Image (cartoon, rainbow, N blue to C red; front, side):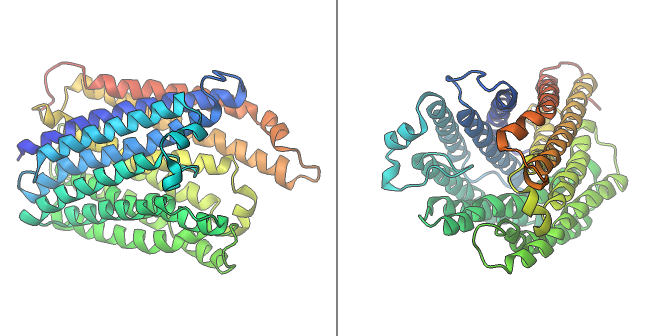
Length: 456
């Protein structure tokens, strides 16, 4: 059954996809600046392109999570959203804040932006991934709290399910751990210690609860498998996630001045972190194999299966490759880290948001699924993006291994810039793969405008 208030998800999805395009464009600019150092300089310096690339990723994923939650919670709760007007109002607040922040990055030197936004009153700027001005961070908190109020009130007045419970746990955790972005101690060890409470406990903790809930919801819809079966799998996955993810934070504490025991705790529990992602993959394929019906939205089913596989490869396998302390000693801060970052974010979070959009957008437009020809284009987008991301990861991994050898292991180690010259070929190949990824993203977007009779 469709609920009228689910329509508030639509602007969130559209805004998220717009920021996704911006993220990829600035990623391509960064990639070219690795090999053509003065490309677009001084108009878009590398540090600015990097800020826009990473911040756009975080903001569009948050927007995608919010849109997904606004679509999912009313349907799961079997009641209308508590306040659709509040949801729409906070969308515009979020979008305008994100747009103004990007404009600020592009038009004002970062130090001047800090002064302009009175960062000295509550200093929070200058930390990687958390470069947003303090006023933007406050805006994010306001948007998050209004969303949580709206969804929690909807949850309380309607049906309670495991999926909404897990989703709200993840969203509340997302909001709570973001508050550590306001804590900016002058002690560098302390700063990094709590910085990871945002960055790690988001992406390797509470975001995984959101991932599990969204994937479970879509799989119930496209497979018709009993809810009880899917919920049991969901509980197993989130238990593994919380145990490995929370203690696994220790693998970031190896080299920042924290006690030595974190080498053991971090290594052991990080080695276990692939388990929830492996369970996620088995879960997705098991549910599809046991499906009771062939859902007309074959593209959404493909995205759901791809999410499990790519999350396991990116967050699981590539995370494990360099997470053990004796290995991380050499790979920390190299392109091996970048390889893991790209495929894990894409596999775990980008793909699950695109799964939700693929499933929900046709329904929001009054059809069970897009036309067959539209779905063919969308599935081309899936394969182009996914295969190109695999190659981006392989090229960065190769660059990282060569970087470790030339810069950190060799008997006659090279300097950083000399090493970058030696791995430039991999950067060029990464750039080509990035262009193909953009083509895949364009195909995904075009599929929603392709006409034709809705699939049956």
